[in-house]
Length: 208
Image (cartoon, rainbow, N blue to C red; front, side, top):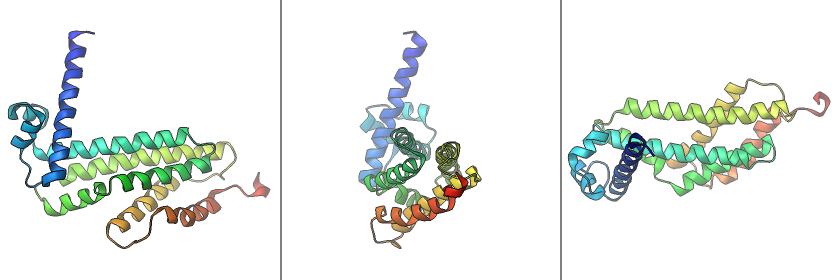
């Protein structure tokens, strides 16, 4: 291992340590009451070291969101790999989203609350991160749709627009749940959402 490689690994470990400490403090005390000094103390690092990795507490918060997005994206990729067909992959992706939201019920809620309550936060950066990740999620759904077209499961459609629609519907359901407009388990909506979607894009017998 070269000196440069070792230094990069040490920096990555230190960055993850800072994020982990901040995540715990934000959870225990809330974003507003947590100070950079407290994050440094929990991470067992100097305050100056924190600022050498992050310009502000806002930036740490955004990094936490990005790490959470990365976890979901990895799970989506695994869900696709574990699928036996394109239709099965769409079902698995939906279940992945729902399970993720159940495990982290405060995740999406935190995004909306922080934007509303903390005007000092760089909202544009948060929105940019959300937009970037939803684009990646749409690409994964698009990959599944294209695979379904290629193997004859789905008819020829606008892959990009259909993928964006699927992601929009799922995020819309999760948002309504967080707003209290939906009281039921979102798993029950799978049997409503996907028959409608699959009926629209599945190949008819006469077309095969």
